[in-house]
Length: 266
Image (cartoon, rainbow, N blue to C red; front, side, top):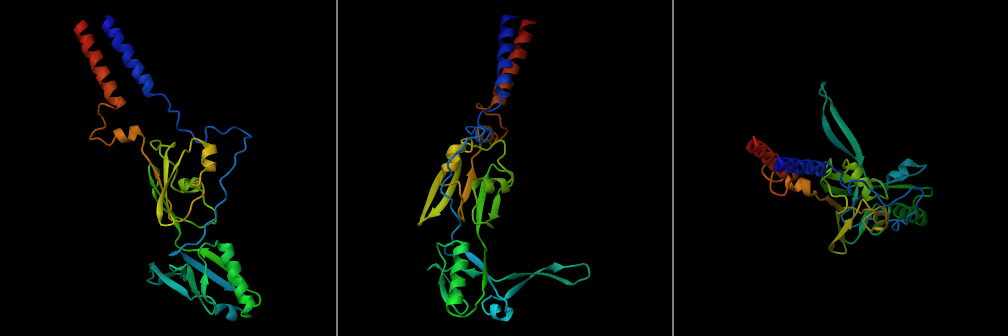
């Protein structure tokens, strides 16, 4: 009878331990109400070779402005029930070459690498006025093919477009539907191409102060975010999830031992 009680107590202890809430689930555990934290220097998206840009020039004289705009491209979408063609239109984009330049109408080669959208718009506007080509230009610059990728233990892994000048790692994770309960919050990996090298940054989402100060807080185009699986998910990768490291294995073993002990006592 004593053996049975001991086994029962051990079984109960295992159940309680398995039901405890992990301490590393909540984000920003160190931040308190009213607390102020320094943020990593604001990093705006700057243009790199192979990026695509949509640049539109507007003026009071639309015919004059059209000389500096690429033609509008019509994309085929499909056919409606009445067999009429559905189409969408978009302005053609400039592709930045390996020298960091684009070939702009009339102006010729314009260096845009290392500049943000506002700087590119100001540069083109200045050149148009300086050369007496357009007196009242309004220049709009939009990103084309810029994106970040989110992989691993998130709800919706995939590639997400960059449409703003400043994008944080929290923005990207939000677009991916947040981490699953199996994702490691304290060891999120970010891979970034910088000066011909692939640099790795580790981010702890449970530590708000460290996150805000990290160079990985603000994203750059082509960044890859990978969320590692925790031990529970790793154990589930076995054939049936019941190896010797899993809680379910030990609970099952304790249950079996208890049943055997009860039968022996009887």
